[in-house]
Length: 177
Image (cartoon, rainbow, N blue to C red):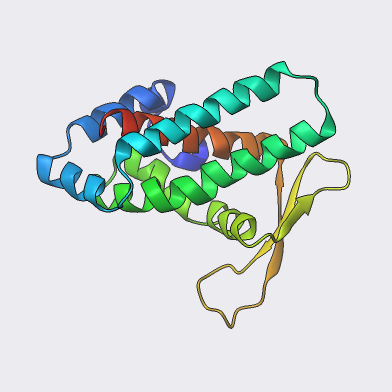
């Protein structure tokens, strides 16, 4: 949790902390977040629930390589592309400076997660040879003249990123719907 730079008491109850911080946003801020997308928050939340159902099915099924790979693709898309565009970017604009929620959103929209999101969105990734993580290629910044460089993320760090993404989105949407 050190990557998030949040207080240990907030880290121990991260979902509760995020839920509280979103719940206490002004009505005007909540309205701006809700109206930032043509897709209603309730539909975004339904997609998260459907995603969780898929994850439950995948975990209960035979660990066939095709199912595992489909699970990886869906989870990375939901956590880093779908939620980045629909949740983290708009949410962080309305959260108080120094809040755990804002720190989570900033973590999720900045490198190395930002580069990973771009690699997923642009199909610039593959498994490491031993399947212990993912290799991906992206620019460090937004300048299109920058070279594309290679990054790696191990499974433990990727699982952490995914958990932060899911926790942040569930807690936020639950308090915006």
